[in-house]
Length: 124
Image 1 (tube, one colour):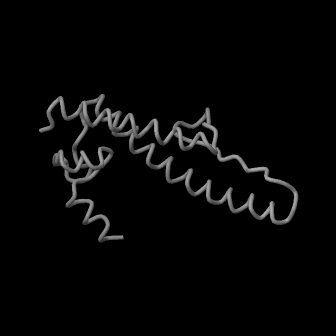
Image 2: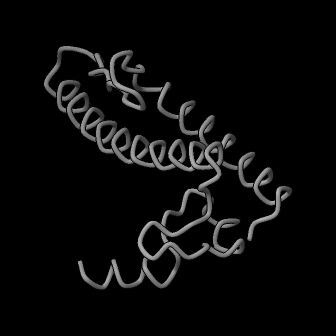
């Protein structure tokens, strides 16, 4: 079972990661006030020339892809923080077993133990 000290350490890592992701997102997107953990990527305005328009589209596509990845990670982090508050943190969502502290140190937002994660990936 996770110790209080370990949970506090992992909670700090999660909060730091959340701040980092929000900072990254704020560089190219604005927070959606109607949907939690959702951002809206702004279409860049580089210029009106053909090469500038192509650059705008490329940059926008890259930012959209990055936005979605960061939003997914942010959702996992917020889910883990909610689990800490409700004393449900550190349990595998598949088998219910405790996720080892060593795994959570590496990825505190993990929702599955290594065994279930491996089975899940193998079935894809």
